[in-house]
Image (cartoon, rainbow, N blue to C red):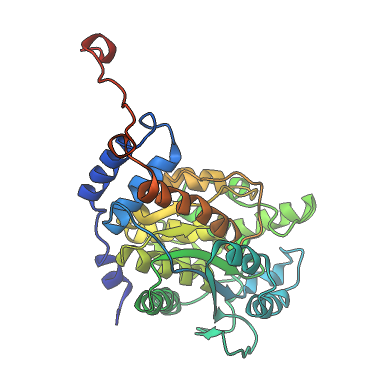
Length: 360
């Protein structure tokens, strides 16, 4: 059992460079011009480094949907009431949400974790690990204690550890929590040079007036709490959310277990930023699924040096972009496992470059 965030971070190793080299060499002998599959080839090499296998496959994969409420909703920063959080959790559990539909298509299970919903929920499929009944209002003081933030991170790690034992080898981050784009924007602005003007977006679809108010709320939360940019857990505790903390643990534990973790949208990317600041090596295990329509997401992915696979103008969260990206991950894996080599297919390969062609 992992006892601390520091211990968890210490388990993360560098990718397997030998497997990456071997994967690149295998790609170059397949029946195609070198590099002609573009980002699919880069993805295949990354997956080899993550797993240590030249031809990995991911038959068991899970979306981890962390759910929690936010006290900052008291400030009127969302178009939807906080009551939607528990209602949507039940929708996930009933299989009726967008992420359920897309996960079924992609062959992924959906695990829903109550890590901080401000309601008592009961369902046989719910993973009930509530730290507290939602965060406090970060515009008036810290969202939670440091101990609560660390506990939530370790809960996320525990969910991953149990999934790995039953055979899951790839994870997708998902979340539910009315108000969590506000917390995510505050985290991003606290940890980077991106101001609230650049990090705060429309979330659930607020109008211009409420957007200006939301920016002011984030500015006030940062001023009141003074989160330490050199201490990611301090930032998380003061202006974050319990589901964001849980996802931070999911990402760190996936990396510690040599499993790829597909990062969904803006909220998941805020958790990825926290994970990267806690354990820089964890970024090597992250795969960015898409760039969302939410303000600040593109800048956040640049901060993480992650290249999104999809541009779909989505801004739903839940893990929806992540499960769509599974089809591309499967494509990369099948190219490695099923495509013929020049030798096996009896196809002539390209001639080696001459001295004039390669500039030597």
